Image (cartoon, rainbow, N blue to C red; front, side, top):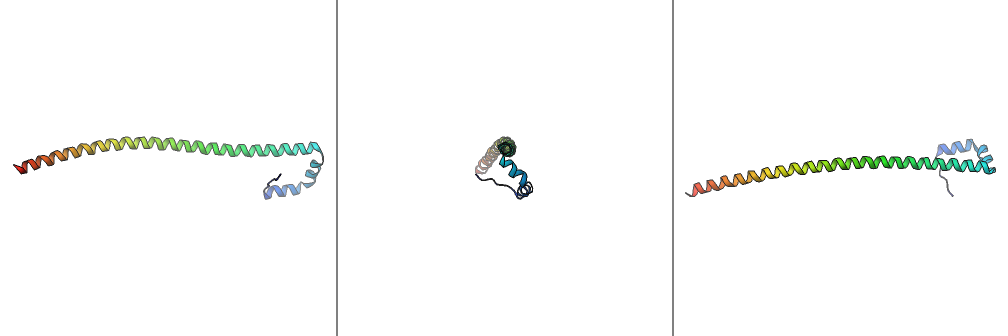
Length: 104
């Protein structure tokens, strides 16, 4: 089994070496140490999961906003396209009328 500790934790372990050695000598101390390590691990895992959950919530909100904006943009473009089509139709009609006038 391998345990990773930061430099601060290592310094604290060195300061409390006697207490740690005594804990490892008796079973009850060992159980307390293991419970403390397990609790610390679980708290770290929970913090990581909470951070990830918050990140996912933020990403989901951004996705919903993007989806709404895309729908609004699509609606705008459809209206714009319709207006362009009507304008083109009108311009073609005017052009045809001018051609007819010139051919007479």
